[in-house]
Length: 362
Image 1 (tube, rainbow, N blue to C red):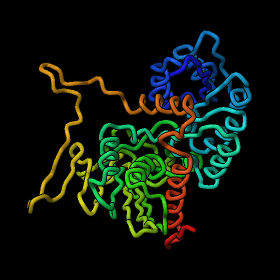
Image 2 (cartoon, rainbow, N blue to C red):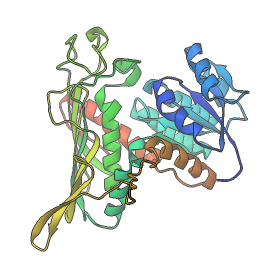
Image 3 (cartoon, rainbow, N blue to C red):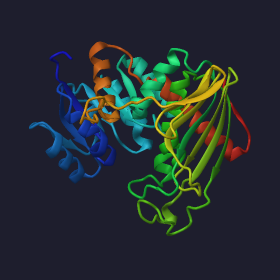
């Protein structure tokens, strides 16, 4: 990396900031955190004291960050409904933007963000950090070398048996645009589309359910939820048909009676082999008249008394690669065009569930 120090503003200082972005930024040598914005002043102040430079400033208004000519990069870490407004202001203000997933609450807003990135010439990326996992990166390499052949069927899994998020605004349909589909289903869908390298959608069919949300105590991992505040679905499923005939089954839930549950995972079926993430990364196929299942060792071991453990966290790699893209003037791993397609599909699944009909893409 060059000697340039990027001055960074943080808009949204809640859990995703303190749990993911700020720790990752603290490991980067070429950033200086100079702005912290949040509607709760004490939260912004605490983040500034822990992660900010000595001259860091705190504000309640994201426009202070977007309009500061010294700021180079803005991390947008707000609820979904503010993603577009804040990101567009930052892009128009000449800043690069890393927006937390999903790209936006609606496809219309995501398109506005895409247009703003093209208009400004600045880099816009979205926080789909599961692409940066060792198993995801290794599987992507295998696919690019033709190991799986043509991938014509996939399952994108985001299933929790009982893990409804009870903090923040996750249960608020107006703030978020939906429940598990837009929250964790978006990760599984993004990962699957990226692995397949297929973004050309024909039509989408969806079904949404709210079967367990009215229960006051359902052995939830994060404690009981308030049914009166639970205004989103608890499960949502989509069937996506691509224009080349490939199909993707997307399964998302925060609470479902399934003993076999898995999150941010892809199952792929190709003409030469298949892959899944059910027990680590597994590749399955047929060679010499026999079936095989192969599990690549993705640890950094191989030396006596050393089992690895120095691997870069996906969130840290996401942050590093984003700043390397800025430095080198290259496309980020997650492009805004890809993230826009993810948001279009999510919206189409919700629409199909509401109208009980398939939704066709142009």
